[in-house]
Length: 186
Length: 430
Image 1 (tube, one colour):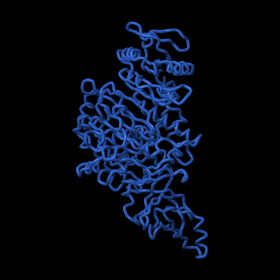
Image 2: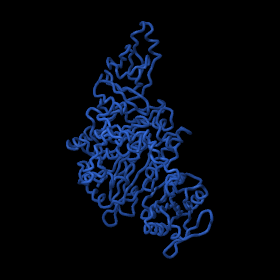
Image 3: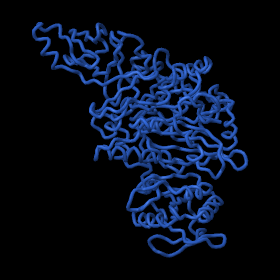
Image 4: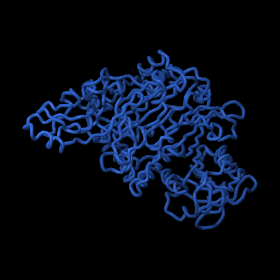
């Protein structure tokens, strides 16, 4: 193949050895073959995610999100630590639940944290998730006046979450939270 | 998971598409300077952002990038003659200068030359050599940004090396590999021990000892910093920080005193992209052995089909899959070389992967945030004309870093200026 053929992006001109097997990559990776990928009309088994707010601003955001349609995720607000557990308030129903109950059957925990989030709360939830082998992620909301210009995420909140979340995302725009949750199929 | 309309929004970059409009806000790599090595050299056909173009270097050393086809009968100017300060169509002799302006129509009577020529101008874009790369800007001339300032193009000659390769899939799934730090512990686990451009770095021991890293994603003015931390000595973490600058620049964290490397992921069309791969050292010339290794396809470079920019390992030869080497533990996937390990898997997804069907997990947060930032920037440009992040040259002054920090320190604080370009100062590396 000439350099020009490569420039031009024409695979048919650029074949040093034509594929001889139907299973070869050249054929298997085409758009035409993508039609034969197995589809799952009902999807895979639904995920069971828990979205837990830490801090007042995060609680407001999670309450608002909880009113929207999701893929089975539970939206909760951290209330207090209790011996060997934590008390959470369910968004929507308003009743409370123990963290240990909520983590039964969960396969992902997403902490949404803002100023005021306590390190103790993050630790209790992080430890409980780790003990059960549940993936934990943290979304740190920007600071600032909710009606004004967002400020950087509070450093203390980031530090509180770091040991307790396998993935930490420090956001500049709280409007990204629903998009991240949607991408994770919460 | 992305909705189909968002997947289409982010993957389609042709003229008139929202993502295409976004790409047309930036100076982007178009060719390597070596492709137009001398005045009056042969023209080069190049497709960028789904536009077929021809690149020339005229008799006076001026570079030009214009519509590939002659205005007269639609003949490809690749067959043309690059001579006497212009590119002449071989069919009827029409001639164009580097701006695409027609300057001669020899078949017409002399008195009609000037008026007819003046009315014929092929679409053209500026083409500028900076470092080893020829850059173009394909947007509105009135919004032409400052020339790019990427550090790898600004260090003295001899301190950098750039290659490019053709990748047969959409640009976004290629880019996403560049910010997907979680695959490195698996797919590329062989490279740390053996590759001459990676091995023997002090930090490699942390990589090899801790296969379950934690991730931290922080937004920057130009895009993202993606930090990956592993356990180091007591009370410390080993951090590797990858910057992504919108839309298509990524930089891999360094290892020891090895050169720093990274990529630009540039759409050819919606089903192909160019991967420009750079290596540079901020404070010293690359050694002959390092340049030799890069040319031999080590590090993040690759070997080529001779005389082309197509990887030697490609989909037509099943990437020279070596199951015996896989079984022996020499490679994780059976494919040799970091760049082709990535490309083989990304191309296997199909030309444009269907993101409505993917099952992302939290370690994909860097990818999720990058898509979100692209999407937000596309909408802001389309709806309000907002210049996207990454156009401002101050956003381009970033470096990757590899550092050991106390556990209670964020990588942003701990790295400080190490994530910024500091001319004449060494990069932060372990």
